[in-house]
Image 1: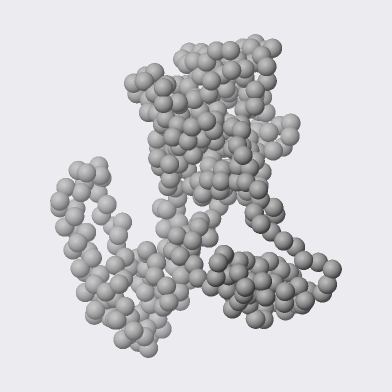
Image 2: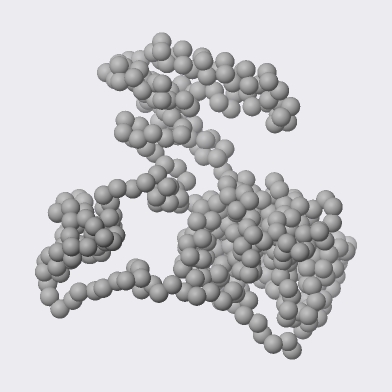
Length: 416
């Protein structure tokens, strides 16, 4: 039997502790003394280096703790583990950092009186008429107008703005928009008008918006491995009348908007016509790099990832995975029959997993299973556990051949 190879790239792990590279704990005295000492050190060093403070408070109040903050001493971040919640305090944060903080959110509701957002809802309220009129030049994507009590229609300046928007949309459509997109987008940017008290209508509006913003599902067949344990290219094995990488790609086309075969750059010319490919741009990382390479090309898509060593996998198992996709999770995956741990290579990875994967890589990890084990994942139980069987060695290939023969015979008998 071929020598067992380490299937994950060998990376040097950063010298992190529980929180970071250079962490120090203080104990042996009461919490007030420790906090006072930390305050002195932060004040001394904050002009030279970025300092943070981590603590736990014992107050029973449900309200945020308003005690003096370490930010006054120069800390860039303060984390407090309260009894019923956790609290971060920051003295400043950039737009990029803000995106990182909210990368796991699927719906972000913003107080527009203080912050801007890409999509806008405006309320028609006589008490705030002049304030709204001042803000109108900066509101270029109003999607919902809510009428306050006693109001029957939007203000004149709002109607003029909405009319201008409608004319701009019509003008774009006249400039061969339908030919470029293959379909008309008329109505997609129309502004809805509802009563602010029509909670059901507002909920339905956002439900439709959430559905429309659902990331499209792309398929990725992992075919860039070197098959060292098998001794031959397992992606080229013919289990179902064609090479396995093409068979799986054809299966994925039934459920995915686009399907790609992941491969090494030197393999790309070998992919036959009719099949798209994504060469590894994160090299030397195995499947981890393949998933990252896919997200690098299409970061706003979810990826249904399939390993190429799954000869027993059927369309029903893929269909069940797609039907039970949970968007709020980092990924939806099958539980491995033996361990119960998530199987990362028969899984749907949501776009929010991209920064998570990069974060784990920056800490020296290239194991997709480890990412899922330490993330919010929706786990499914496979109806037919044998379909999740990986074939990586000649012995496993022989066993899979027997099981596949039995599977096909059972299917044939069931149709008679």
